Picture (cartoon, rainbow, N blue to C red):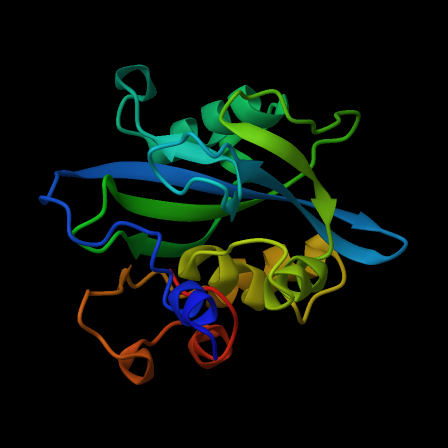
Length: 212
């Protein structure tokens, strides 16, 4: 492995040693639709100038704002509308997982990941300046692009995509998550070896491309 490849494999360009900052509640939405090709999820590529996760493929989402009233479902619905123009009903959101950003990052979040079906009659598009591209993709296609070095995936994003892989319809994944999703907070602490990380898809992520 070349020096450049080794640095990329360790995610060396991602800050890890900054002064600790407060943890902010946040919410992220996996917007889903069923097509003839199967289950698709809406993803976007963050702009290179972003302080947090530049150039990384993510789902719509963000931190809680005062107007949200500390309701993460309200945050999730608001961020989905602001970032991809879709109005989701907060009551339609199904929790999938919860992740806490490790220390040493420029921003830290305690993030709830939600699933949401694309509401009938609505279309999703990139309407935020925080992203430079967005669109619908099969979960496996996003992972394959990461394995080929064509995108960057943080561990939480990979894990959510990994959990979608067995499903072909929105109804199937929502039904499964409502009964079986694990909402135990996942915290990847700096200093852990790859073998010590535990989350859905951890082994596959550790064996893959860029590690964040």
